[in-house]
Structure formats: structure tokens, C-alpha cells
Image (cartoon, rainbow, N blue to C red; front, side, top):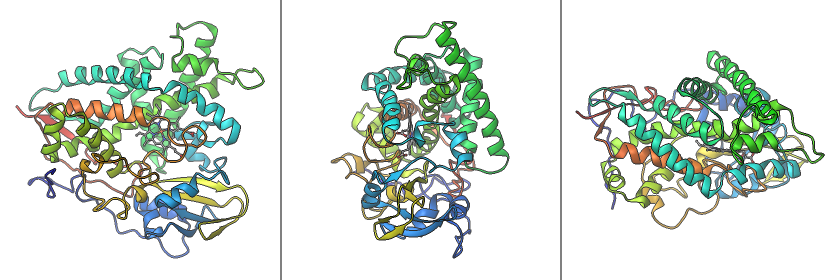
Length: 431
Ligand code: HEM
């Protein structure tokens, strides 16, 4: 049986990730629009509204809507009576995914675009990314001097960018990797936070779009030698059904949607670093080469730690959603974080316990950190295997080192989306 480490190590300021989280006192007031509740409360909003029910009526962005969750809610969320067009508020979608991205498409157009991602993110691609990212972590680990703390989140952003760009067929020296890493992280950090972070995210998105459009143009015009079959090649050459090439800007958005989400794995890596130090039993198993333990650890990181709070779709026509009457255009909001922490399926849900994943696979619709439903025809994330690979290789490398958590602020603010331990996770290799 895995040993539990229910108490944070002494001498640590703030609440260590994995034990306690700081939720400020803000609460949704009666009659308040759900979007405001989501913005103010972040990860706690949807499960607070739902209170364990599969569906609860809310007003969302001024419309009669519903919040759903749990396996029944997940199944209903991926029902074709809902659409994605117009489901993501424009200021959020444009900055995070880019204009016209696959996330907001429906039906045949969606399936056609989705197929490009599925054709790229194959098991062979995951293998290739595993060896590339392993190499990058080896390089990074060489710079970690004993006793000198490094910021794990920053390392992860750089390693992941350095892994993804060459794999995607994008030429990038060290300076280019650093610049694009900063921009990709800025987009992910600020897309949902009104204020200076959003301004930084919007600026980074403009620069990335401009850069990616230039890469597409160069690939099409032959100014760049592009490896055949690489994401850059595939996105540059993909045509519309009438034979037209999409604009370089649109193709660039599609290309960035292969690279940008992989950098999001840095948020999981940061949480994983803390969990590794707190869980010597699992660290030792992983360091000893136990691959089942490594995979279970990565799954538990995706389940336990917050990344996506909710997903949204819209009713194509007026319809009943699990007993709630939703008019045409009303929102159906999926409680992702609450579903991953549903005590009916995950006993003691806030406890970090990779042992949950050593048995049979979870029931469909109970683990949805990257969405659920059908991969090819629905919007489920096509990057789950790649996410696991990238996360596993980070954890494997870290597990081999005698790591310590120097004094720092590891508070996790659940009102902030996306969130992570405030310090970015300072680690140091024991001298
Ligand atoms: C931290 C890691 C990741 C998280 C939390 C994550 C999460 C998600 C979620 C929640 C969705 C939407 C599901 C839905 O709308 O039903 C999604 C879609 C998507 N993800 Fe990921 N993802 C991650 C990593 C990746 C990676 C590594 C890739 C590619 C290399 C990727 C590519 C995509 C694409 C292209 C879509 C759009 C799918 C569609 O609309 O049909 N993601 N992801």
C-alpha cells in the first residue's frame, strides 16, 4: 500500500500544493451571472453551483444556461445537439486558441480539421517526442548545480518549447526558443485574466500569429526546408475542400495549436515537482524504473491539479438538458475540475494518490482534464498521449535527483485560471 504524507513538511510558508489551497472568501451572490462567478471564483465556481447534481440551471453570459458534471453530465455535454461555434467568448478564444481554431468548429468542418491533428499526434509521434523531451531534460539537469535553486516552471516552459519546435519542423536556435517560450507561456498565463496579464497575452498572441504566418508562407514558397510530414509541412499544405489554401494566418493558428498546448504541460510539471518531493514512496518507485508507477503518477497529476476549470458549448435549438430547459443559444457548461474531484468516483478527492490508477482504467466520463467523449468526431483533446509522455519524462528525470523544496510560497490560488504554486516551484538538488 502506498504510504500517505498528509502533512506538509515543516518550515514551509503558505499552503503546499497537494494539501491545502487558498480559496479567498469571494462567493457567488444570488442572481449574479455565472460568468462573473467563474471569473471571481475560478475552479470552485462550477462545483459550488452544481453541489453534486448532474445539472443545475444558471444564467451564463446573460442567457438561460446549465452547468453539468459527472459522467452523466459529460455524456450530455458531448451530445451533437450542442454546438461549439460561438461557445468560447471571443476575447478568450482569440488569445488562447487563435482566430478560427478547430476548437470552435462543428460537424464536417470540425472533423476535417480534427483529422489533421489526429494524423500528426500518432503513437509514433509520442515515441519521438519522448526521446526528444528526455534529451532536453537531460540538458537542463546538467545546469542544476547542487544547492542552487532553480524555478521548475520556467525550466519546464523552456524544455517543452525546445522539444516541440524542432519536432514541429520549425527551425529555432536557443534565442528563438527562449523568445517563443516566453510568448507561449504568456498566452497561457493571461488569456483568462483581465488586466496586465491579458494585455501581455494578447500581445504575445499577435506576435506568435505573425511569426507562424511567416513560417507557413516560407514553407509554401520553398524559402524554408521543411521536413515532409512535420506539423509545419502538414498545416502549410492542407487545403480547403474547394482546393484553396487557407490564409497563412489561419494555417499558422492551426500550427500553433500543436505547439502551444504542449507548453501548457509546464503547469502540470510544476505541480508534479511538489508532489514528487512530498511523496518519497512514489519518487523511489519511479526512480527505480517502475513505469506503471510513473504513468499512474502522471494521471494523478492531471486529475488532482487544476488546469481547465470548465468547458462550454451552446444549445443548437431549445432543449431539455438533464431536466433543465435550455433555450437555443443557451450555454451548457461542463464542470471539468469538479468532475475530476467528484467524491462519488474519486474517494477523498483532494488526496494525491497515484494508486488510484494502478487498477482498472477509470469509468468513461470520470476523468476529463482534457475533455471527454469521442476523439475523432468530438472535441476531446488529441494531445492526451503526448501530454502523458511529456509529463512522464519530466517526472522521471526529477525523480532521479535528491530534490529539496527551499522555503517559498507554494500557495495555489484556486480563483486564478490557470493556477500553479505561486513561487513557480523552487527546487534544489541536495548538495
Ligand atoms: C496540459 C496539457 C493539456 C490540457 C490540459 C489540454 C486540455 C484540452 C481540453 C480541455 C480540450 C478541449 C476538449 C473539449 O472541448 O471537449 C483540448 C482540446 C485540444 N487540445 Fe489539448 N490539452 C493539453 C495538451 C495538448 C497537447 C499536448 C496537444 C497537442 C500536441 C493538444 C491539442 C489540442 C487540440 C488541437 C484541441 C482541439 C480539439 C478539438 O477541438 O477537437 N492539447 N485540450
